[in-house]
Length: 146
Image 1: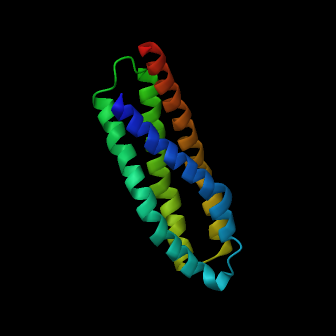
Image 2: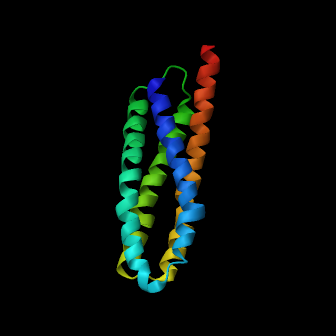
């Protein structure tokens, strides 16, 4: 159960962070003057990576550990859904968001900001769904233990 709580905590933190980025931070990049956007995007990447990388790492390691040894009573559907949605966040990060961040650093075009915002809905949705699945599992396991 402790592993599930750790995993859920990391996921909830990432969900809150991704919503902040999606609704506030990424759209505000569109207000950065084009001549300054490349430097801003470079600073964004430099500063956000130490925040998200450890949380995503904890999510990944704890998800794999849960798959190998789930708590008694954990739904296999929830476990599978969680792993699938986790894969979606990683694939989206690698193949949608990272290239768009790279494009911002290299070109600094406003269209790259719009692509970043649109593409990030995939991760925002996946992390939100994972949070709901995991909270449901924590509740169900806690209620069963009571």
